[in-house]
Structure formats: C-alpha cells, structure tokens
Length: 75
Figure (spheres, one colour):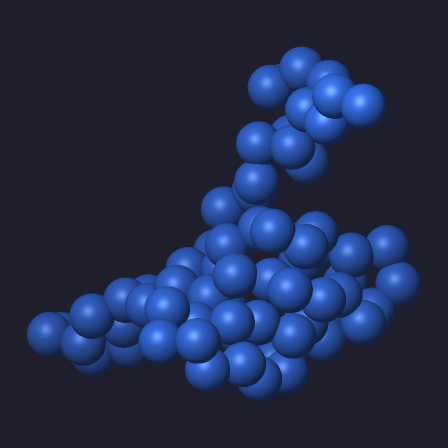
C-alpha cells in the first residue's frame, strides 16, 4: 500500500451494519509512500496507523497521473 498526503483511506465495516469510515492522510512516515501514516478522521481525531486488509486508498487527483499534471498555485 502506498499513499501520499491528501489521499483518503476508506475503511470498510467488518460486520454487517457497521458503517465504513474515512481518514485523510496528513503525514507519511514510511519510505516511498508506505505505512505508517498519520491520519485525520472526519471528527478531527488524529492517529498513526498501519492500514489492514479492509482499507482502500482513494488517491487525491493531484497524485494520480491519469488526471494530468498536478495543479500549481499561481505566483
């Protein structure tokens, strides 16, 4: 698993009726985008995690080459 700052981690529920939840990657501690990650949940709680098999990365458009070059701020 490789992530960048700004990517969203989506955690699926492990049991029926358990809602999925999301967290935004705010810092990558591993080399080349690998875990551990510091993430911020929707309620602003932050923690460090090693994502498990029930986790999917939603790549931020700025990190996905299929969206074209990254957006640059005008100076």
